[in-house]
Amino acid sequence: MCETLFFKRSLRQLSEALGCEPTLERLLNARQRLGYEQMAQTLFDAGGFAALLLEDGFMPDRIMPTAWHN
Image 1 (cartoon, rainbow, N blue to C red):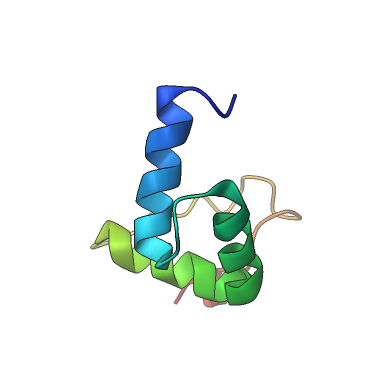
Image 2: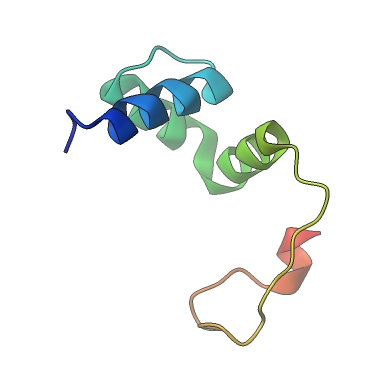
């Protein structure tokens, strides 16, 4: 899995967004250091989203509450 082009490109792009070296170890460390909310905010900001549509009936016991997304 770690040898696919998709994996290598994703590793490079995620590392750029998180400001770390493009290695799996550094990426996992950055993810742990940032925590869930900061990681999500960083990636949403990097993605340049103008809007996000939420399906509130999809696995309600496994998603963040609507207020969290504001």
